[in-house]
Length: 110
Image (cartoon, rainbow, N blue to C red):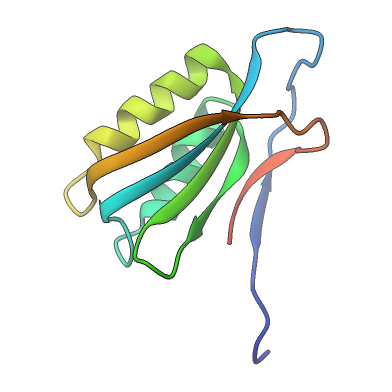
């Protein structure tokens, strides 16, 4: 499929919209984050904490990540992203809180 963007999607249920602690953050990670399994690493972390959102490579070599869920769970994932692994080395990460998406039901990679 030439020119098509393939999306892998994973359904995560249980986001409680009655809980006022639901937040959404947009992160932009810089460093050794493309070609090293970073998006799949983030996906596994997000699913383990029952977060929704996505991870997407950018043209400048960074990766944009949106995480939605409880603040404490987002903080756990952000800390693990900074730690990285043998292949992943996050040198810098920008984070901003954005409006939650009540229709977001899973975590996917673009």
